[in-house]
Structures are given as C-alpha cells and as structure tokens.
Length: 480
Image (cartoon, rainbow, N blue to C red; front, side, top):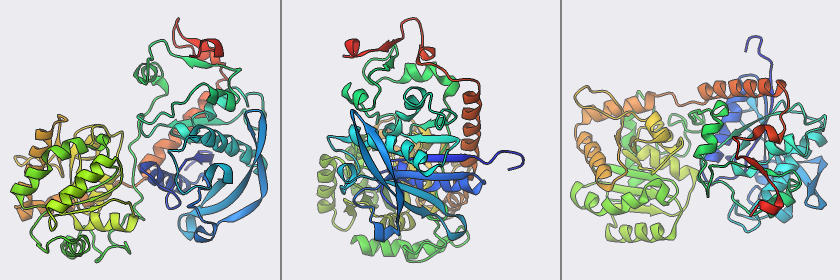
C-alpha cells in the first residue's frame, strides 16, 4: 500500500453470500469487501438479519450493545449480531441488524413495508457505528436499500461531529430497481422538512439526464468473482476437480450433470446451460421464440436453473415435458447445483436485454463453459466474440436484441463445438481469464480516496445540488 492511509470502510448491503441471496448483489457483497480488506483496509459489512440467517448455522454472536433507531416520530431498538466471512487468516467482520418486526421473515424483498424496512436498516447501520464507537472513513452504499444515507449525512447528521467527516460512495448495480415509493417515505426517514431535489428533465423513471449532469461523480467498475469460492480445482460440489491444464476432466462432470438432471447420457451432445432469474430482462422472451427449433434441429441438451416470472416457469416446465431427456429445469437456486451446472455444461447462455455487469458469465468461463451473450454492458466487456478467420476470441455474441440474432449466435457456437480442437482452445481461453476481484478492489479504493478528497473540499448544501435554472427543492405542497 505504500504511504496510502489504511481506510475504515462500512460496506452496507441488503444481501450477502453465504447468508442471503437473490441475485448478483449478494455475490459482490460476499467478495469485494474481502478483496479490499486484503489490500490492508479495515472493511466491515453490515446487513439485516433475516429469518433465514440462523444464529447457530452461521455461528453468530449477539453483541451486548443495542442501537436506538429514530423512525418517524418514534424510536425503535435494533439488536446487533456479529459474524464473519473469509478464511481464518483474513476474516472480514459482518454485522447484522436484528429487528423481528422488520426482518424475521424468510424472504428478503417484495413486502408491502419494504420502504420502512430498509429505512430502518439504513438508519440502524449509522446508529450502530455510533454505538460501537467505530467511525468509518467511508460508507459504501449499495442499491436503493441504502440510498438515503448520503442524503442523511448532508441533512439529518450534517452537524453531528461523529458523522460529519464521513464520505460516501454509492454503487448502483442495476438501475432498473430504484426503490420508488410515495412521499410518506420522506416523513418516515425524517427528510420531509428538508425537501429533495427535482431534476427538471426527469419524468417517470428516466435517470439518464440526472446521471449525465452528475457525470463528474459517475464511474464504472467491472465486477469480479470470488475465485476461492468458484474454483473448479477445489470445488467440493462437483464430481471431479479440474483446471486449465486438465480440461479433459470436464467430461466426468458432464456425465454427472446429465445423470443428476435426468438427461440422456450422450457424451457428444452439447449441453447449453442457463442460470439466473427467469425474467424478460435476462432474455427469456428471445429464448422462448427460438428454443423449440434449437432443440428440434441441433441435437443439444438444455439445463436451466432459476426462478422468476410464472409464465416462464410454465414455459420451461412445458418444454421439459416435451423433451424429457433433452431438457431439465430446476425452479430453484442452490449454489452446489449452480457450480455443477457450470462444471458440466459446454455452453452458457446469457442473452440479457441489458446487463450492467453480470457475474454468471464470468463464473461459467472459470469452469470452462463457453459463453453466448448479447453484446451489451458488462457482457460486452467480459466476452470477446470468436472469429474463425483470425482465431481470436473466446465466446459468441450478437449485437441486435433479436430472436434470429440469438439463434444465429447459438448455431455458430454449436457448429464450432463440432471442431473439438478449436473448442478446447476456447475452453482454455475462458478458464485462463483473470476475473478475480483484486483489480476492481484497487479501483474502488481509488474512489474511496476521491470521495474523501471531495469531502475535504467542503460540505455542500442541498441548494448546491441544483442542476440548472429549473431545478428546485421539492416541498410537501408540490411533491405530488
């Protein structure tokens, strides 16, 4: 680290592996803080203790301190539990905010009081720092669940000597999920008297004008994956271990996957896999349009794992019934099965309509599954299209979000699969790519330093954030 100061960073997240997961946010939260801590910084994670986060299962310890949390016109109490992630020589502390009223549920989201639940969590996180006497230099907020914290530090906690020196960094993992609620949320959060910024060009859910106006504070960092957790050379969940020098061992994992999924035991049949949410954004509208001809004419097999929209549950279940030895569908998510699917499949399909980064394609490549993706966002950043003329590339992509374009990309992959020497080269290239978190962690530390520099230049008032002559601070009277 040289002369760089070791930072204290509070990493706030609604989910984190191995405790609770619905998507990629949990994977990032379970890996990025460990990578930053490995650089010499004091990073601590904080998340809610949901009903599924069992004290005994995860070896949590209830701390003697409690946090008093202002909520609307009342105060509530949060208990605090402590656990950790990582290996014994590099444990990263994880604090859990406990409140049966808000979090003693098996689910994570999709409750009618979600706004109040995550206001409570965010406020409790701040008060827990005070209670523990641990003052972070930077609070790293993630997604809408903790998005009020930068506002609070400029308003509610502005003159509080404990919080006034703290800088913030906010990561938007997916702009589709914005946490849009009514004005009552500001009252519960204690912000109704302060007001909020209305950008003159924003209507409905369009954030592009706001992001462009704030581009001096906007940065993009490609995610990484936890290369300790996702390591085919040591993974306890797969049939046979392998690495980039022993890819022939993937054949045993393929046979094991076919047996587990109830597929026909055909070693030469290419297995296409899909792991993720079963929603339009992940490209299932395109998949629905081409999957029947794909299976009828190409001798491939399909394995799908995930949950999502009921229409896609029904579509995939019907597909499995029509092709009982060709298609397997697991309407669930379990990490051991996920890893066996990556290890045993030949092609990983991820035709997302949009994808800010994406992690599954990186994990699939680490296990030697060659990706077929829509050329957009993080998929374009992490997958290079294979070009037979030059021999360069390690995957297959399509530029136009169109069913025929997807079908063409899959046919290119399946035809290349027939050329075994070339295919083995692609597998080795995929497995050799470094998708570890270290490079991304260094970039995040740089942003922490930038945030602290901006903070040191002076506190700004809400009026300073006016984004043009028409921007205004909205009050209850005009906040309809």
